[in-house]
Image 1 (spheres, rainbow, N blue to C red):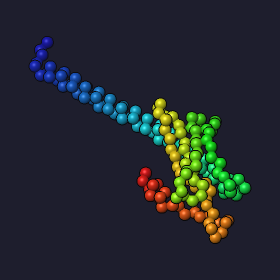
Image 2: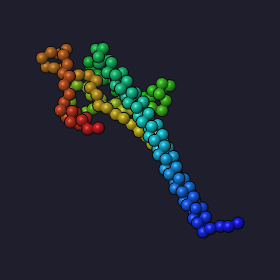
Image 3: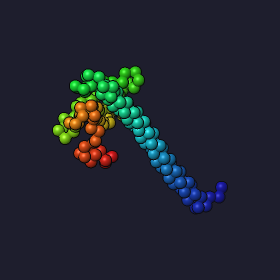
Image 4: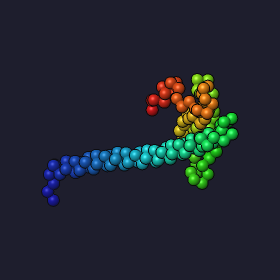
Amino acid sequence: MNLKKSDGYILLEIIVAAAILAGGLLVVLRSLSEAARAEAALEKRSAALILLREKIIDLGKPALEGGAASRTAVNISGGDFEERAPGYSWSAEPVDDPDLKGAWALVKVTWTHAGRVQSVEARTLLKPAKTAEDGNNAEMQVPDKLKKENTEY
């Protein structure tokens, strides 16, 4: 058998190329894994935002329907979404701010993802304040304080 010195270099080049290819594949697989994790987190967050929106609507219904209870107090509490969305819970608490007119609440949806507690929240007007001139008409203007706070995302 007749071996040349260049035959050893070819084998070395193949080994180096295989190592580079393996390293590249590891990077691609890691990127795909991270993308899958991010997608799962965004899916949970999207579901939480939908649940938050629905809970805000549910909390505002008594005020919109106009019963006696809606004119005197805003029902604030918390709970979970039962079988509809297991693993998600909600809470709502009154916002105590003298600059805000009407009954405002901070509504929060909480869930656990990858061992970490996550949440989304929104401040919402549940019951408009009555104007001085007409006890039945409501002021629907959002205070400047809230406009400034909620413009940055």
